[in-house]
Image 1 (cartoon, rainbow, N blue to C red):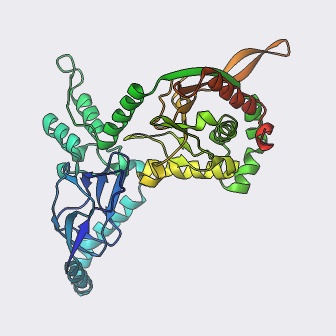
Image 2: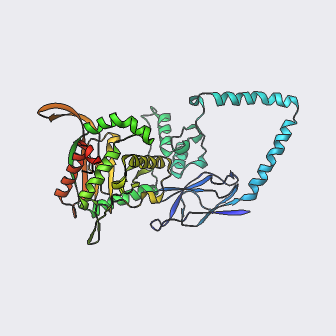
Length: 413
């Protein structure tokens, strides 16, 4: 029986999707819920699983093609899989009746397989990829450089060979020959990268953006994490990180400075009575901002759990569209990459974004004495059309006061 595989119903904000990569080819056996193809929208990558056990009979669109909601993209022959699987017991029975000489011949192979399975993971061969399994950009690179992708160790999702892997491999092969390789490649932006570029230009061209800075002594936060971190993890099953402190401090400050939590809609200002905070997460496909909702109501443990779930989803490419929609304010942490100071870009239609940075031991004056303290610069970029400099500065001072006296957060002060 032929079963059609269709593009999932896409939200109103997403008009179409691009075939990113097929994980099966015609003739391959597939199982129910096994991922067949990745579809890339301008926000997330969607996995399309098989709805039945069977054999992939037909693929209707190739990688790079654009498809729309509910469009048929593949056909699975459900009966073929059942017929193929029914032959397995017969084959096993035939093998059992084979002559003893045959059994002796198979034995060394079985022992070799056992030895290979028992070998350390570092000695096992890298994942093998054929040219047909590569995404379009990587196929181009492999063909141009004359590289056999099965010889390249992949660093992408599930060990996939990426364009960067091939470029690095090519550079390593040709280094030192005639002055060294000078590879160039022109590839189309991914849907997600193109959307990021579009939104950054929208922010630059439509917002009167300004950035204010302050610095925070994180000594008491670090002391609290050291004193209570182990107990917190035992009680909640998750580590106590820095982001929950910043998210909670921001949520409290947004309640006291509502214009920072507002957005512009035409000639109107929309004030939000809740703090849905977008947390910027870096992935191999670009920056995404899943939303932790109602942070003002959440405990530290609930914030950490949601952030941890989103981080795992982002790494595995499992973020759903609804995870990214909404958000009244954004926090981004360039400090994880070593940034000491930056001016983050506002994420429209939001009006402000808080930038965290690297924690550095610096000399400060405390009670008349010079001491070393773990200091962080914080930045607030904001839409100057509705947020005055005074509001931005007071908001940052509010964040600073809470983080330098973390007990204030526990008391809602």
